[in-house]
Image 1: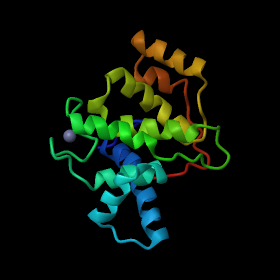
Image 2 (image 1 turned 45 degrees about the vertical axis):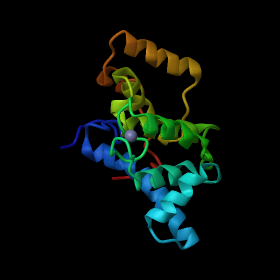
Image 3 (image 1 turned 30 degrees about the vertical axis):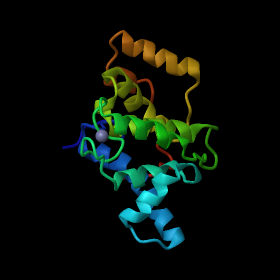
Image 4 (image 1 turned 180 degrees about the vertical axis):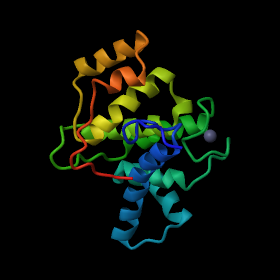
Length: 182
Ligand SMILES: [Zn+2]
């Protein structure tokens, strides 16, 4: 089933959009393994999460994806909001590195990272936060970074009941040079 939204904007409910978001992380992880000539092995993932700071966020998120939370059984950091180990992992992984891609607005990578976390884990966030990233994520992925004022304006509209369709009609991502296609 496809959602008819901008690419990525239907995650996590639309499987195709969710797969696109997941691929951002998985591609980063696979590139890392290839670069260092490492096997895709649980031991490698464990080594990475022991020392998060030295690695790119995509690599850290990819490593967590290969490990299971001992308390709730989810992929680490992706369990319900009330699982304490997942809550800790969710915080720890933010110490990973984030390097902006060439030619984007500075801090764009941070927005991609937060947006990917929200869109992959809708159950850990409010419906309004989810909607703001469904609108914002295709924009930041195309290199744009909304100003604080713009982001606040979107949030204000959401609080007043604006839907995805209302917002997507105004906030149109630049699909030229789209970094990841279906
Ligand atoms: Zn958990």
